[in-house]
Length: 149
Image 1 (cartoon, one colour):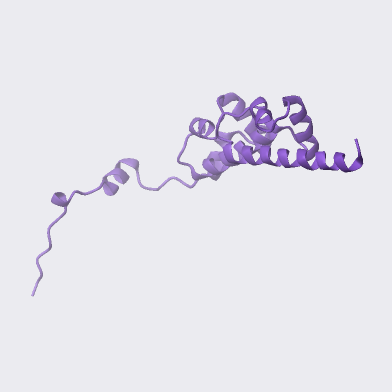
Image 2: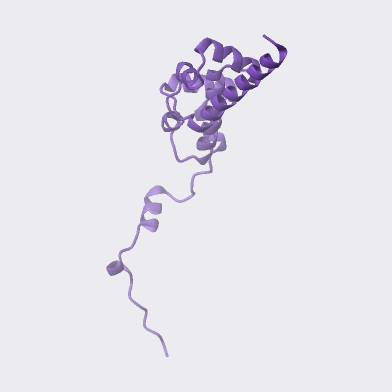
C-alpha cells in the first residue's frame, strides 16, 4: 500500500470515528452498543473499539457512559427527578451500574450529588404550597371589590 492510499484510508477511518462519536453525543439516551455502532460505521466491533480508543483515548462504551453521566449531573442539579428517573432518562438500564459509574467519574454517589447541588427546598410546607399554587377556575375567582367613594 502506498503512503498516499494509507493516508487516505486513515482520513476515511477518522471521519467514520467522528460520525460514531457524533452519534453517541446525539443518541446517548437510546440503547447503544458497540456492535450497533460498528455496523453503522461499516467496521467490526473490535476494529471500532481499537480505532476509537487510539483516536479519543477511551473506548466507545466509556465515552457513551461519560456523556450519560454528564447529562445525569445536569438533571440531578435540577432536583425535580429522582436518581432512578435520571438513570433511565439518560439511557442506563441498570441503576447499580449507573450509580457505580457515576461514583467513579464524579467522586460521589448520585444521591449525594443531587443533595449537594439541587436547589434548596421551598421554605413553605408542601400542603400550603399546593393550596396557594392551585389553579383557580373563573367561577371560583373572587368578584370585583366594591369601590369606596
